Length: 610
Image (cartoon, rainbow, N blue to C red; front, side, top):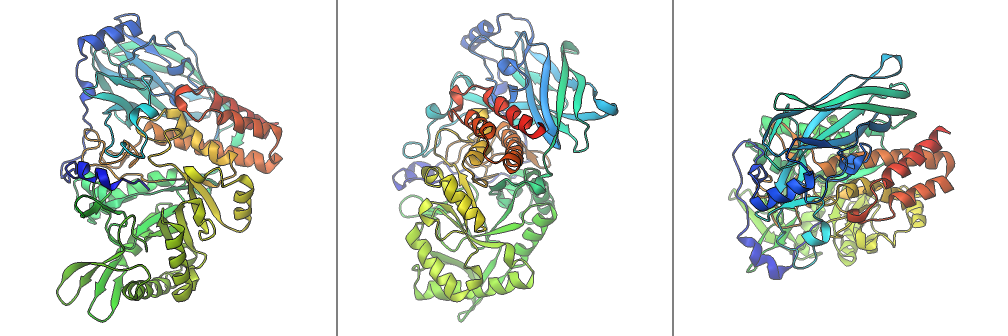
């Protein structure tokens, strides 16, 4: 989805990051001692040199919607908050955070959640993680179309002395953490409410400890309403996040497509399934996101290229195809709870000349052959592929779930493909998926429209498409600055995205990419594009490490499920219309009232229970 102008390509060529064979480790310059200037600023913000704890935003209910700066520069709010109150429904997660800082180095900071007990002795569980800070870097392409750091963020969430500045994003699951003097450390809580939880009030305590003693203890109540969201597999929200298997092997230092790699792929799949991921995105060509680089060369737009899951071979007379890896990837993902849709990328090259990559069986060499769109060689290769692919997915019972998928290709090119598909493999006539311009709406049965065209996709048109069995989502990429899911986007914006989909009667949201990391995302977080554009999670020790924005998106998807239930119950009532307006009334999270989402959600829950 992301793009880069050719005139800056030369600036980027030297910035490629070599593949890493080291084990994943979280390291960051954020653990260094503060400079004298930062010490003074943070001490003033704290108002003391003693250890303090606080509730970001002042309310536990909205605390997760704001990133805590590593080095607070303004007076800290929420130091006087003593009661922690949350509200939830059955079968969902609820996110919140506390923070701690001190004028001296803190050791073994931890948080303990006492038994959360409710009606009939029912209990709620809690997971505790620590916000990890990553350096903030400018993208290589923001001189042109991409949002800049200054457009996206504010001193509320980014802090430091520019050597580098840092932002809290990754969520590290560990028992305790050490914190430098005059540095804030947020503690992230995820409360899970079982689907069979009885409605009512659940009570417990949260204790924050450091240096071997208790620093603060808070009474906590969670009010559970008599409403439930479905299991992720049953979400109505259509989530389409593009995963990259190659970077999993790279980040974890394992051999590509080894047994250990497949085991790790499953861990990432299950994380996606927990969000209700509806698409298994596959590659049918090498490097579908190949891109113009410098001096006429072409390289991948991701730090590590995608490889084809389909083996292409040419013997001098005909093309043949090996679908074994594609089959295993799809089978693995389906077993892990992804799908049912399967996206096959891509018959069209992304901002590059059309080309074929195959093994010449006569020489054993890999050939990259440039061809003309619609030309004789292109028609031969893709005609042979489409017939073989149709036969294969029909034999395996996957045809009704398989889509020929395309990324931001112009409508004139898509028209060539559409006509060709109708000619040689009409079974795919209505199985074309496009992420891109609204101009491709007539071609795409499954359409994700870019932000520039979202206003043209009216609620009426979206409903018309839905009645015709077509799926309509939207996506953001390096643009717009707000709302977005960059590493330093205001946290509330990820929560707001599903509300935008609900307000516009869209089916869900698409985002590239889930995990197209650099080789060292905790130290060198940028390859080309705006930081975080290429990934929503980080590599952990044995699977994905979540992020603030990934958790907020999950919370927003659960909100969407409640909105869908109320819409089914009462239609577009005044209550629902007003709630949607409140939740989305300021798309720039830097100035958004952090109570908006809570107010809107409370109205929806009340509408469902009254």
